[in-house]
Length: 135
Length: 135
Image 1 (cartoon, rainbow over the protein chains, first blue to last red):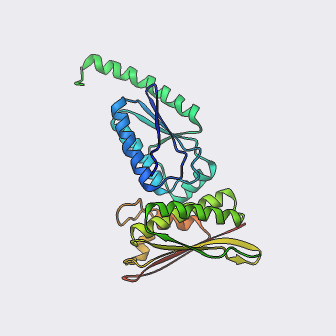
Image 2: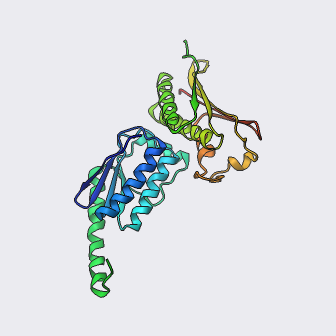
Image 3: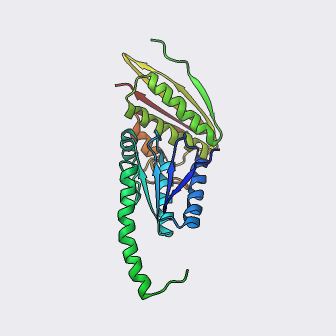
C-alpha cells in the first residue's frame, strides 16, 4: 500500500494522486485527510486527479465522502484536473459526484477556495461578534 | 490477425483489481480502442472485478481479444463460485444495492460496454462477460 502525500499550503491541503489507486489507498486517504483537516484547521482541500486515468464508483464515492467530511470541519473540497475521458465515463456510469465541487485545473480550484474563503470569513466575523463560540 | 492469447488472473484481493485494470488497459490499446472507449471498458472491468471480490467471495477473470470481421475487441469474463444473484432484475436496477456499493456496479458497467451477459445461479456462482469493440 502507498501513502498518498498531503501537502499543506497556507490553509489549503493539496493532494495529487499519482498512482493507480487500490481500494485500501482510497480508504487510507479518506482517513488521513480528515485527520489533517482537523489537525491543521485547513479551510480547503484540493484533490488533483489530472494523472488519474480511471475513476470508478469506489473512487468516486471517496470524493463525495471527503467532501461531506470536510464540510463537517468547515472546509471545502475541490476536485481538479479530471480528464475528459474520465468525465464522459463517469456520466455514463451514472455517478454524480453529488456536492463535490470541481474545477478545470489547480489554479481555478484555488481561485474557488479563495472566493469561498472570503465570503465565509465575513459571515463568521459577524457571527463571532454576536455569539462567542466555545473553542 | 493473431489475437493475444487469453490470460487468466485471480480476483482475491484489492491489488488484483489494479492488476486487472492494467491488463484490460493494455489489451484495449492493442485492440486500438479510442481513449474514451479504453477508459469505459477499464472502468467497467474495475466495477465488475470489485463485485466478484465483494459479492462473489473472489474468483477469476479471463481476458482475451475476440475478432468479428474486421473488428477487434476486448473481452473480459468475471467468474465466481459465490452465492449467485437471486433476483437478477433487481440487481440490474439502477441504484439498487445489496449493501456496500452505490448500486452502479452492474447497471453502470452494462452501459459502458457493447456487450454484457450475465449468467448466474443461486448457490453456484455468477459469470459476467463484457465485450468492447473497436470502432
